[in-house]
Image 1 (cartoon, rainbow, N blue to C red):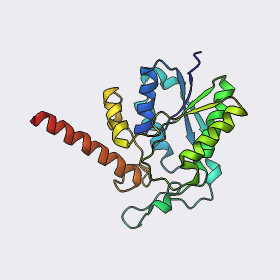
Image 2 (image 1 turned 180 degrees about the vertical axis):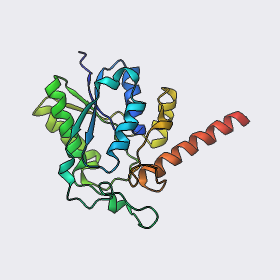
Image 3 (image 1 turned 45 degrees about the vertical axis):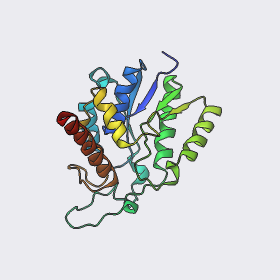
Length: 216
């Protein structure tokens, strides 16, 4: 076990999939951990994860079910919206302390396996409004977990844009086109939620750059 090895919070989304390939590129071994916290798209996310995780890690996936935590939540990330009728705002997708939950579960699992690292693909372009999404929060949580449990929270993409993650994913040959990360729809990406908008803008920018390079 290397000093940088750890667990990866994996969701089948573009960011965590790119991070998986980044870890391999940097010779870091990991255990993919999928957490079902009651999100309406949990089944789609997990099925997608099985398709996009590096093949040699498919049988290593650990599934953690804490879906009852948010069973009373009215968040549209928990209760799927009718995209034909419902008008969804970013506030409707709010889930209290989700990142605290995911990272502390990750830290608990890491220490149980004897790892010292948790890898998360959080980036700064998620338009998140939760209080546990700020850099200050992550810095304080990392300090707490390090001082009282020897667990380091690693977020290599924290200062990346979605475009930078997508570009890196392509460079690493990660199957980013197959990933899924919609917040409002559990089956077909809505194209309008913050995650979908970021993803579409990133792919359009990459497509434009590719076109301009071809023209030149």
